[in-house]
Length: 448
Ligand code: NDP
Image 1 (spheres, helix red, strand yellow):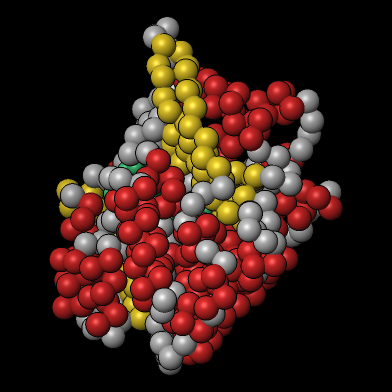
Image 2 (cartoon, rainbow, N blue to C red):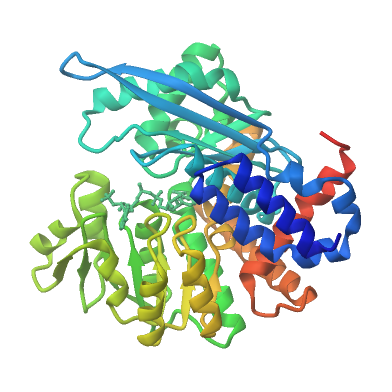
């Protein structure tokens, strides 16, 4: 069997065994197709049934999360934790709280996380979790009661050396605080390294909040430099206005770019003078408000209803930082028509497979999520190291390590692309570089 036949046969297993899980199918398809040359070169992987094991999570936990709201009504949500692959280290990956969460989304995120974590060069395996709970519009007490109920089950499945969750959409410092407090009560131990994204007063790392957005810009700057360019003087569009979007905007602006648009799930703002990120931080981080409130402070800006239209704004560099599936083929074609030179993904799987095809066939530089947004998990791993050593690094120390990690991710992805005759295809390079480390570890550990 050659590489192509092997990948095709495994994709059929994925589809028949995981019916209706579109996001998971898409993520696996994108990765496996790019691994075909690896199996041509390494037939021993085929003999060891490596892919059949790689696409099957080691463990999936689904549980009931009951909680009582402020009106005294009982609510029941569904909780998930998928422990996907521990070949190179304990499971590591965020928790997402959003009404769209289901097993397909958690599996796609967990699968991507395996490769992303491997790319960081740090000893962490892949996992992901969350719930279909919607934190929007809930009181602090409701969020706390939900987080406590969620942790009442999750705590028995996680641990310093087994599984270390972190934040994702809907899970920031507040939620991690509630979860850690309850974990500590149940476990009876101050295992700080069991969750990352903690507050600075109880084991958090400086620069963790900034890490994904900053890391995205560091990675993209490397990609631009390798092609004789940089952020300096460029017009940038960033989607979303959450954690990743805010810090990507801040760092891109520091590097001399002008970020002209940001969005939330209702619409986008356009500020031709460059977004004032402090105003956005106040709206989103302090007031938990809507992006259109930006106009109250900057009346010269414009607000457009409908978040997808943000890709109609002319830009040199697009940084999708909101959510999966936010750039379809049509939006990709608009970006190409407007002369965009680079798209780099802050969110997980924001571009559809068709959109990626449009970018690549038109010669745009493309930074895939698993490489470009790995700064968050890399910094989480640095948080774990600090917790184990019981010391804290300065912001500058963490930021310096982050920059080095992002540069190495670009270098390793780019070299793997060259080795497999796919020069400039960072998507293929990242998939291969991330996969090889995990595959080698799996080969050495026998059939498990
Ligand atoms: P947040 O919850 O902080 O922010 C998400 C933002 O995206 C919000 O502004 C939200 O708006 C907006 N949004 C949601 N859906 C849409 C949509 N369809 N169109 C436009 N905007 C939308 O999440 P994060 O910033 O943490 O995460 C963003 C992405 O980055 C996710 O894909 C996540 O998996 C990924 N990521 C995050 C990491 C991290 O460290 N935080 C690490 C690696 C990846 P609204 O307020 O209206 O909901």
